[in-house]
Length: 376
Image 1 (spheres, rainbow, N blue to C red):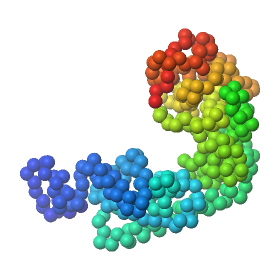
Image 2 (cartoon, rainbow, N blue to C red):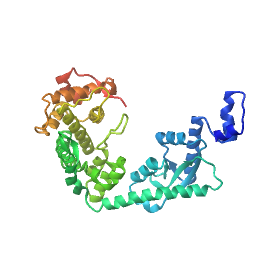
Image 3 (cartoon, one colour):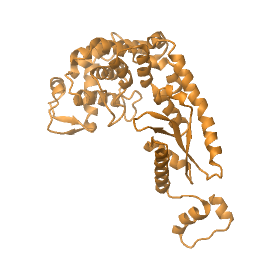
Image 4 (cartoon, rainbow, N blue to C red):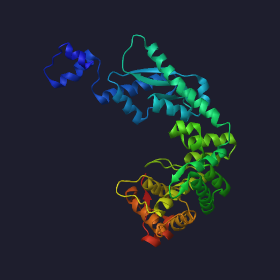
């Protein structure tokens, strides 16, 4: 469009006239924030007109804003039968693959509609809408097929396949890791008063959804698909929830696991990784942290502190190390893990007059007791 203006010989006396000329003559909104605000307002109105609320996540909104210069917001739909597929898989397809905005009803349920942004003001918008509906349908059909296929067998049936996937060369397979998580989850559950059998069961099933068709195709659905498949298999609800929440917190400010069983599994998974990687001497160096050990350490601390769990960091680390048997080569692994965890907590905490009771015993081993709380 801007090229067309150049060919037309458009002239202006001052530079600040250029955006207005682009807007009036070239149908180009040059200002990024103006485009973003227009997309947001138009999408909210489009969703309101069909009785819903648009999922305008900031990252996707910014990406779409950068893709268009003359945003035209349109509403499309898909077949209601696809709503039988877990909403997370449908949303992953719409947002990740197609850059569409999903629409939710007031009760939080996904509607069979989506909002997208075209870069042209067509005389016949129905053709653009129809084209986008045709594009998204095969992806939703794939999700439906994967979901139905995966449910033909129990989640537990995927355990043997975990033996074929390497966790780390010296530390064994994902099946080895799963067995350790199961045992450590049960140990933690016993310490914090959670259901030991449910925690052990959740730990055993924790990585099974990685072997499903759905997660293989839509990787961001790991955990949540484990929850859906566990519910389909009739597993206890706190087991199913634990499968979904085992990776939490994923980032600063993320939600923590919601029940004691989920807390046990989330801590066990992270502590197993910390013990294993430090146990073979692969400490993070500089800004290189391929196993996300800093995130794991902060996650464990946040869960213990904010959930006020009665866990001793020293004995927790010793138990995680013990489960590796003779695989570990670092004789100082327990001290190294604890030093690392308390060290990386420095930028993630702030001083506050709230005693960190669960850590008092273990901190006597490494440093004087401090009164801290995790930063929100």
